[in-house]
Length: 79
Image: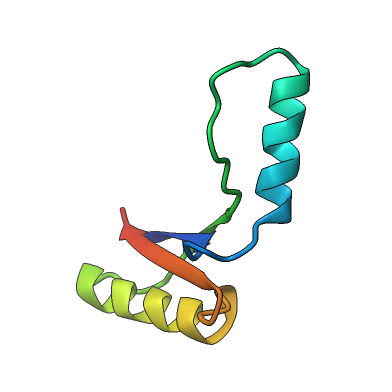
């Protein structure tokens, strides 16, 4: 079973990578781009076959390692 964990900076947390991307887009002539936030996507292949259990395992992985829950939020999708 595949799990996708999307990790993003929480609102209000400084995002220097997002700022740099926003400035680069403006310098390339892309007008009208507002705030840019940069995160990461982690795709996991899990041996678990029960979707609910797979989601629970992936959420625990996100809480314990994949996301810094003080400054980042995460979302887990199973598919």
